[in-house]
Image (cartoon, rainbow, N blue to C red; front, side, top):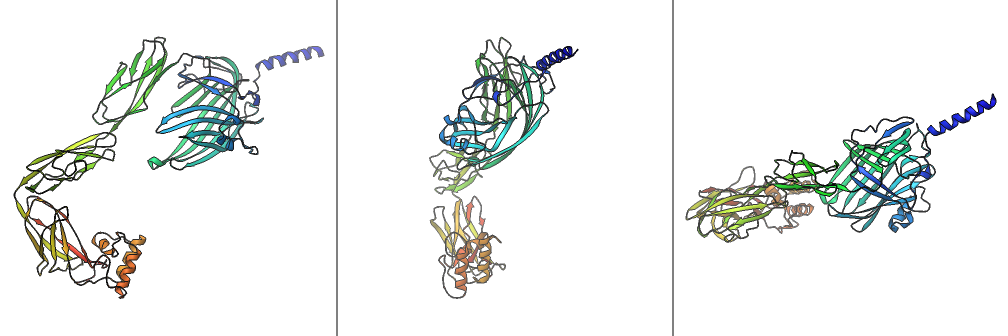
Length: 580
């Protein structure tokens, strides 16, 4: 009887061992010299990958590949020296033990990445991701987590759960700032047999839930972007394979699948990431195919079925195309068509000038993407046809056409008419001190200047502060006052007002701000306050700026008489308390 029991136990052990889960430990991870080919796809084709259990069967044999990659593993000591100084320090308890080169990436928004390596740490208890090394436009940059992102904790046993948190931050002058904080929770939730197009394998499944916070700041754009990522990884591990037999990553609506495979005939479809066109323009979309078996059929997201399509969308949109070859393999590509709004151009109001006199053209532009490039026509009678505000000197009535092109290449147009004729008009008004009483300034010289600063005419105010300039043709001018009267008004109150402005407690503007610059430095600061205080107590008797300042309004005479009052003020009398 005892022999029967022993034989029964032995038989049970054999059956149990044949059905029991495999053991995954350090020996099943990648080794230096390993080279593993994997296929990639972006859909599970409604296959159930989420359900798991003991002695479970997962059948992914119908997966269709999109591209392939080969993962190679090398010794950390063979990577660039700069990387080794971070990842291979002898006494670092988290130093990397193996590396995988990742190739080069050119012209990523003006940035070239070379010598890309991923680093991993492998011990008897864990296999984790340590970080990456990249060479950015010739600058070697090792990026190492403070502790490894633990992918597996050995031995893998169904029902076990572990977690890890890994962070890094990187500040690159001239490029920007990048930081990442990643929290991973691993759960070994099943074992059984997994089947892929490469074959069937006994396996253990690991489900990883990852929460990641990325902070990115790009110097060239002067902006930062926080990114919260949440994704789930499913990995089926088999004996002596190094990498998962199949690995599925799900992030939102996006699914990425990597699985062991043999060399496949390439069939890819590619389109530019994006097109930028101006509103109202037409663009042709096409797709570049590599491999597959012709003939191909095409189905675009807007229903068209030709290899290339012409579109003129009213707004930015994503366009996709599905290509099917004669063997039934399908590939999809998409692109973003970005509609750029053209600049809105206003060439200014129609105007009139006296024959032989200039007219100032003043354009206003909104929308589009600055900087703007200006083209006026006809150019022969303009001071500069490539600025927004040229001076025009037309011989007769002329329509000037303006085209403004923005930095993207979108353009807008407008026109302005300049009438040339003989009319002359009057400019009149009052010169007043800028106090609450609006004190009339008598005996003040008022000058009429052209835009080049030449004196065209001048007059003096009467006892009421009134002035009048007659026989002024249509055109653009500037008024200026000359004052020869005693100075006054500046005191400690004005000095205090300047200090408040300088320290940001209050702010001066307009003529008071102009009157505050007594040292003629073009800045209002504590020195102006000091000079006013000195003059108030008699330590100085003049200002570098002079004693008086006033408005110098830019005016446009355009077929009518013009009323224009002018305010004046003593330098230093910031609160305009003086009564001259």
